[in-house]
Length: 463
Image (cartoon, rainbow, N blue to C red; front, side):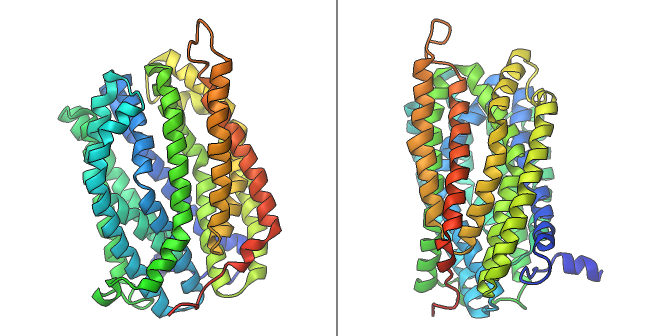
């Protein structure tokens, strides 16, 4: 019983071998990311199998718009994770309590904003993107339901980030697994059983996420030995709110830039027709599995760096960064190889259309090497964020996504126009992504080695 209790308690990453602490923290997160991907993938598999390829395309076309309006939560989550990990590492109970309280309050405000704005702007955005008439109504239904129930998504992701900042990646994993099983069960019931189609998928997701959010709140309420969780701490503190927003805003802007670029590229993808749209959905779902170790180690390095910087142990940060990046690259390379070998079978889960499976596999091979480059980018960016330097990753993302990816995608499409491909070859969007990832890894490495992120630690400065 003691070992189980210990597994669900916060982890101090300022002691012990860095690579061991990173792996111990990362394994539950990696399992959680796998579950998260199944969570997202279940929607696509079920609508693809029970409704058809157009429904699959509808869910995928909705994703860029969905991501754009979730940037508020990305900012809160990033700022919270950095502050929680640093204050936990510094053993600053009062600051830690205020930070968590601010997270809960700001999440409520952001949720209300999205619930009001989301349904209002959805249809105009879908029209702007030239979403095919055959799928536009499904896209709209999916997004409106998601936005109305956004609080569950928001609170789970932000509070799970708080738990991870405290070093507790196990609880976040368990709550996600519960939500994943529930989501898949509800997907099958709503879509296959009740015939609710794409709307049923959105409804299932909202319900599952809300339950996982409630579980996170209950868990945090039981951690009173580490911080104070009461009504007083929920009252917004100007200094902590300002700091959280200052730290999180660059990450929110980064996500907004990425989402806007995805929307612009989605418009190009839509011009290729329903088959390519559905292909893009399948590739992006498989892409989620290939990206899992990268995002996992990026988050792990943020918590690791934050706690050790809070404890003023910079030598451990440097040592852990090297070890963590090597592990991330090795894991990413292995998963990428497995996807290249077995990817065709995985893609066959989404659709029975052989032409669609072959097209998707062709696009996946283009992206393969880029995942290893992303392992480097995510690990080093995670360290910089953990130190409080969220601006540098933002500028790198701006350069690689807007200045590079979008022009490359449209440029290749323009140059490859032909009678067979009047709007250009569909490979253009995937080649542009590979170029963006590779350049991002190079630039991130350069800025990490310059070391200005080391000056960004802020723990204990605010009252």
